[in-house]
Amino acid sequence: MEQMKDNLPEVDMEKLRIVLDVKERYLSGALPLDEARAILRERVKTLRPYEIALAEQELKTFEDDECRKEDIQQMMVLFQDVLDRSRPDLPEDHPIMCYIRENDAMRGLLKQVEELAQYPVIKNQWLELYDELHKHRLHLSRKQNQLYSILERKGFDRPTTTMWLLDDFIRDEVRDARRLLEEDREEEFIAMQPVIVADILDLIEKEETVLYPTSLAMIRPDEFEEMKAGDREIGFAWIKVGAGNRTEESKKPLPATEAAGFASDLAALLGKYGFTGGSTPGQLLEVATGQMTLEQINLVYKHMPVDFSYVDENEIVRFYTDTDHRVFPRSKNVIGRDVKNCHPRTSVHLVEEIIDKFRRGEQDEVDFWINKPGLFIYIYYVAVRDEEGRFRGILEMMQDCTRIRSLEGSRTLLSWDKSNKAASKHSDAPYSAPATTPAPEAPSTTDKQAEGESEYVSCSCMKGASHAPKAPEAPQAEASTSTPAVEASAPERAKTATEITGATRLKDLLEQHSWLKAKLPEINPAFKMLSTPLARIMIPKATVAMMSERSGMPLTELIAQLQRVISEHKG
Image (spheres, rainbow, N blue to C red):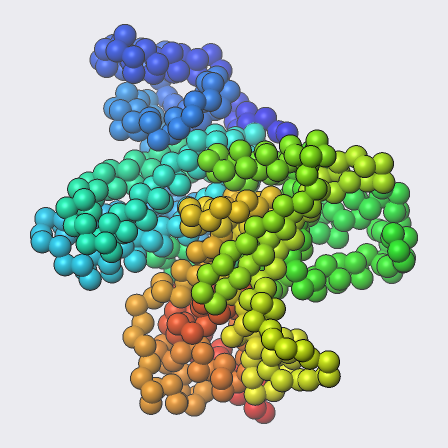
C-alpha cells in the first residue's frame, strides 16, 4: 500500500510533531490559547491543510468516533494565524468543486431550518424541507464510494476510518428527525433542529478545511477526470453538473498499470493460475471446462443475468460484473481495495465474521434478502476454495428476483409476451418489460449505508457503490423525487413526441415508444440506471425535467435529443 506522504509535497515531520503537541496540550487545558498561538506563529509559521491530515494519519493513534468528537471550530481558533483556508479556484464540474457547491446549497437549507423552527410547526412545510435534506445522501455516497476510495489507496485512510462514522451519524440524525415529524412528535422534532444544524455545519467545516484541500494535494488531475463518470452515476444533490468532455490532457494514455481495465485484470488473474496467453486477441484460453477467448469471457460476464463480485483470500476486491442491469451501482475504484474499508465501521464486524467463518471452514455460504413492496433482492455469499480445500476468497451473487418470485403455474412453450424480459431490450415491440419489471439501488455494501436500516452485508464494496453500503434507498431511487416538476395532466401525457415538455412523464414516453429506453444511454450515460432494478421505482415518477436534473443536461437540450431520437426512429 502506498504511503500518504509519498503522494504529497515534501513535509517537515518535526513541524507536524510540534503542531500535534500544541494541539493536544491546548485541548487538555495545559496550554492557554494565546500561548499556543504564539508557539505556532514562531515555530510553525504556515500550515497547509494536508499537513494537518498527514499529522493525524502518521503521528496519531486511531480513536473510535474521533471525527465526530473533535470540535473543528476550536481547531480553527487555534490555527487561525497559520492555517491556509483559501477556497480553491476550480471549474464547476471538478469533483471537489461539486462537493463545495453542494455544501453551499446545504447551508441555504440549514438557514431555512433555523427560520422555520421559530414558528409553529406546519407539517407539510417541514416535510418538503426534509425531502431536500434527504438528498444529502448523494453527497455522502459519492464521498464514501469515490473520494475515500482513492485517498485510501494513496495511504490516507482517516476519512474511511473516522469521517465515514460522522457521515452515517448525520444521515441517521436526519432520518430519525423526520420520523419524529411523521409521528407528530413536534416538540422532540423541533428540539432536534439546532443539533442537526450544528452537526451538519461541523461536517461541512471538516470537509472544506482538511478533506478537500488534502484531496487536491494528493489526487492527480487525470484521476479527478476519471472520477467524474462514477460521480455522475451516483448523482448530485441540489446542483446541476453537465456531462462534459475530458480535456485533451486527460485523454493522454495513462501508464499501463493504471490504464489496465477489466480485460487486463482478468488476463493477469488467469495467468496467475496457469491460463496464459490471454493478451493475444482471439487466442483461446484453456478454462476449466472448455476454451474461450478473453473477449468471449468478458462478454459472458457482461451479460450475466445475476451480479457477481469476487474478494480474494487477502480480502481485496478483485472483480465485479459490470452489467447494464446490475442491481446496485458500482465504481471501479473498489478494485484493489480492502473489503473491510468498503463498509462503515459499524458494520465491519459482520464482514469480518463472514470472512473468518469462511476462512476457518466453519461455514461455506450465507444469504440475505431485501423484501419490500414490489421488490425482492436476493444476496448470496459463498466461500471460494481450491481443489485442496484452501480458502481462496469470497464470491458474492446478487439478483433482483421480483419477477421470478411472482411466477405461477408453468410455462413449457415458447412465448414472446411482455413477461419475456429479453424481448424488450432490443425489440421495437409495443411493450417494455424492463421498465416495469426490475428495481432498487446501492452497492451491496451500500444498502447499509444509504438506508441505515438493512441488515445484509455486501462484500463487493460497490457504494456506492463502494463504500459498501449506494444500498437500498439508493441515491438513484432518490432521483425520482429530486425535481419539483409538476405532474403532467392527462392531456399533457397524451401529447405526441414532438410536443415533449419538462412535465412529460417518462412512463408515457416509454408506453408510446417501447424501444426508447435502450436508446436513452446514448443521449446521456446517466440514463443507464433505467436498465437496473431501480427503474421500477424511477420510471413511474420521473418527468423529463427530473431527467434533466439527474443527468445534468439542460432541459432544452434533453428535449431536443429525445425528439431527434424519436424522429430518426420513425424515419
